[in-house]
Structure formats: structure tokens, C-alpha cells
Length: 161
Image (cartoon, rainbow, N blue to C red; front, side, top):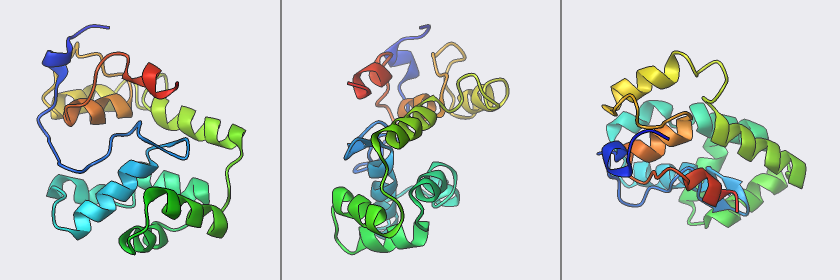
């Protein structure tokens, strides 16, 4: 992969925000959504993130689980752990079997790679984030992790272990 970790390190440092690959009961991204909810309620989430709360990956995650974002928000702000919030989703929406979890994790972690975002969205976001064109970002997860300074080339590989 082109680019180095130093060249692709982001500048958006947010204390307490979870990364995309952090797992909750084997599920990517869920911890990130919950952390954004809590940070927003505490007034510690940067305004740049407000428009996508409940949208984008948050919305996809909730729809896949069969629950509303507002209900997940309520559960997360009630002091429950990420695992407890996900258990609530399973009880009030749908419980994912191993294959459904694999499909979700695969889709989420590969969004932007060889799909409708590849040719325009990903390159545009690389520019918007001020990253070098050869930084190695091929997915939305890459961009988020780079922007927030967590990314390294084999991050995805380690997340799947």
C-alpha cells in the first residue's frame, strides 16, 4: 500500500471515540456509534459529526438490527454498556446469526472498495480530509481511521482475527 502511517495520520483527535473496527460482541462499528451518542450528549463530539448522527453507518447499523437510532440512543444514554445496548437491540429488533454478522461486518468494513463510492466519493473524501492521494485509503473505514489518527496498513487484517 502506498503512503506511510505518518503521512496518513489524521488530525481529528477525539478523546473517547471508538474506532470503526472495535467490536461489540463480534460486531464492527457498534461501539463507535454508541461512543458518538455519549460524546454528543456530553457536548464533547465535534460539530463536524452532528449531521451524520443516526445517518450513514449509524442508520445502516440500526436498520440492519431492526431498531431505531433514537431507541439505541436512549439505551446508550441510560448508562448501559455497549454489550447491553446491543443485547437490547437483539431483544427488540433482531438477533444476528453468525452469517448475518459476517455479512454486516464485511459490508461495513469494505464500503468504498469496488462499489459505487470507489471512483468519486473516496477520492473526494481523501481530498476533503487533507490526506495525500497515495495514502492507501480504499474504504470508508480507512478514511475514518486515518482522519482520527488510528489507521495503519494492516488494521483491517487484525480486526478480522
